[in-house]
Image 1 (cartoon, rainbow, N blue to C red):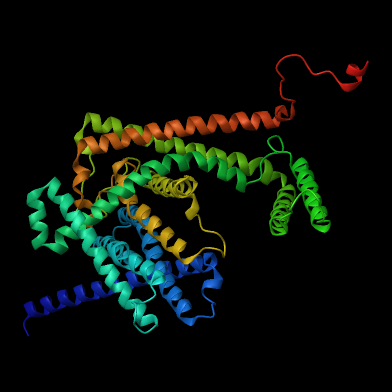
Image 2: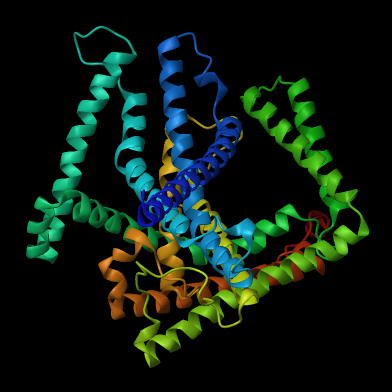
Length: 488
């Protein structure tokens, strides 16, 4: 064998080893995310649905739970996708020839982006509708009962839904671009599925536009409930006294249920007592908190929230100015660029860390705002009391939000890392008016929510701190005379 053949063989072996290494790394990462999501869903699911007398329903719920676990793992992977890429780029810039990080390369990052895109399509279009129809199916009339009969009915319903959705998307694409719609009929995989996912991602970006400003405003109140406030802002002794007084009154009413005037709901009274006991235990824990936790933890947390929120709004404002000055700030897709050549932040590694922190902060804020909105408040999961259909709805919504996070971050200018793979093929990302109006709407809604919520919260805390909430309400006109004065 000649030397050229040895060189070709060595190149092939090297490519083979790199591909095997990428597959192993991707499998390990997804397995870790899958285990974490399985543990989380196990703590939220309703145990009664998995220990029923009917083994068929329990089997169906277990299969649906595994599909939800897969979907939630994909959603978590979509959240980590952009931060992992930014950090990998900075690591390759800092250590370009380190032997221990040779596995971290552009091919691995591109592969992860493509896998997340593929699994997101698979979960949104097939797995989650299958899980919902599977839990609601009973089998066709006249067929034998069993899991297989439910599978047949679910597959038929899923096929009909797929045809309906694809037809609607094809009609929408024909209205927008007739030539592109003809091409989609001949090239289903390369055009049609990315276009469908582009529509879903656009809906997710719009949902983030509504939920994130609301979540940024709600983060202050949520953090205030989780942390122990200074004694200037909160009177724990008074709250403990009121809680103990209400608990004693309800306990006395339960022990003496006889009443000729009122019909007492004993189950409701027991639930109220349990809620008051839980509240009293939490208040006692907060009273036993150390002085450092009371006087330092809460101010530092609020300061961090203010800094992160201010940086987010400032970054969006700077991006709006860049859009007006130079169209090069428009988001675009990066298909063939390699990592480790240039930093995507003007501040270097420090700026990259800030970008990652802001992306995670906005994602957490969007989830808080999503569950705080009146439209989706009923979907909020409860500890060991979440129905299977509610778990499916939560997984679908979280996947829509997380898969739109890279597009959301790039549209707002939180990072200059361009979208990889099929994420960069979204046509509406190149529309200047859509991107500019989106940034302006986000900045306006965030400022409005923060001003309204922060001023109301500060006003309420000041009123509570100075005891103005305990003052008697003003009465219009002259005060009413007492009975003794009237008698005299």
